[in-house]
Length: 504
Image (tube, rainbow, N blue to C red; front, side, top):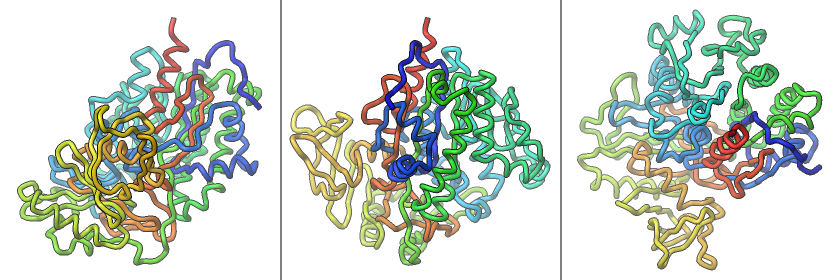
């Protein structure tokens, strides 16, 4: 089926983000008939199979780009866990239950509910909710961990949460007008309250993908928002447990929720005539070996250095050499500022010689260095003379061994298929000081333990520069879709469409 002609552009958009969805699984699910709703949207829209996630390919950094259209260097969110030099402590957005216990459950909840959106997400970038509110449009967010918007909503935890967190939960959180987040925040339309009628733990359990679909459908039926961010998170959780090979089953389940939303209309054809649908993911996933030797423990790898120990409250550098934060298939190393230049060569040598580390990278003034067992590469933004061009038309100069990023130059174009858009993504990541002084990535099937020693052995994970963590599908039933999109291109695509549709 071809794309249906439309007399007028859709004045509403449903923005569907499927956490952790890889392209191969999406195509298998749609081609096999197990995901008819996704297949229908794909057939009635424009589809790109090799959209590229920002680096690092980890949920908070990637979802912040999907909310703002900005790179990590601009939006300020580096990963699930990082060391805050100003606050002198580790920030943890819920990396694992064990890590939450080490850091303190109340602090983790405040980092997610308050600091992530109100303090860590840069005030210099605007979210899709803020951009659309400026032109008089109402937006909605459902279960998305990044939700900053122009409205303040009361946070209403249940009695058990109040007992656990005492008085440390924020009383309000910023969001769009129609904001729905688990059982803590309910928008003014109170959509889908029937599925949230049970209090306490059972109520929280009902805040699933099915509940998100119910809220989305009711908001559409009531015409309460021009843009609804419909977030489906269960695929990522299942993929972490069971590996990315489970994704076809996971996406078949997610498809049922999308079909439920499409069924709000008399026909699916009517749905795509009246509403625009944009579907993508924040990142993909790659399998993690069940072999314990493929799980790096930074306490062991960096045992020759004095390290900041994770604990509740302040975690000061004092006389320590470094702080280290594992983030799935990537690690951030923060060096003692008084000895940074002396420490860095020793830390880099240690990491490069470690099995399972594929790349080590850092900044040197205006240049970026990537070293590996393959070789060392140095690159920087170029000018017209003597530069090469990547797929986003960025100009670069380099010296050294391109095999560090699997690169080749053909007719003045730099291509890095094993590590897509490597130069641009590395720059847009490590330009953010919060990622640390030295960053390393893991080889395929390898992972780095989190602060409390947790891992996804035998399952799946992501965060690295590798294509398996980075290649995601993108489809849109809107006009003028980006031709070769990255996750930073989705928000401008939706915002531009809605501005055109509502102009005049």
